[in-house]
Length: 190
Image (cartoon, rainbow, N blue to C red; front, side):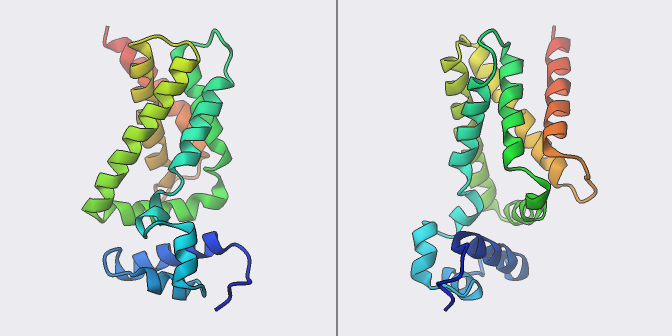
């Protein structure tokens, strides 16, 4: 086992994605993931609680970036401007270097109903994180709740556009575009 090699977490995540694509999520075991990464099963559990967490372990980082992006906007920012700050902050992790991994992850999640349910739970937690950051930024109810829901809708829509096979655009450009579309759509509601 190559325990001394660097980037154990990344190696485990890549091995898991490769095996999920080859064999399917349900047919892949933690032991197989560890073996493919040339690590031990014990090492796997140092980084991930279970194999689902390989796919959903970045949730806390997303929530933190949402909060930092919102708090980095001016005090008089509108709810849409604050949400725009949150989405712009995600550019730090949704880079072209991570696009192939994001596409592989999305394909695995889309093919498994249990993982789709877990994705919805992740979304609800991200909406709450964005709501809390908006409230701390001084956005009152119900605007904070509506902005958080729209912000998460903008995030998921932009993410799905970003991972499309023919996409060549940066995540942040897509997110800004989607947020503008949602702003127009909400204005049309009257």
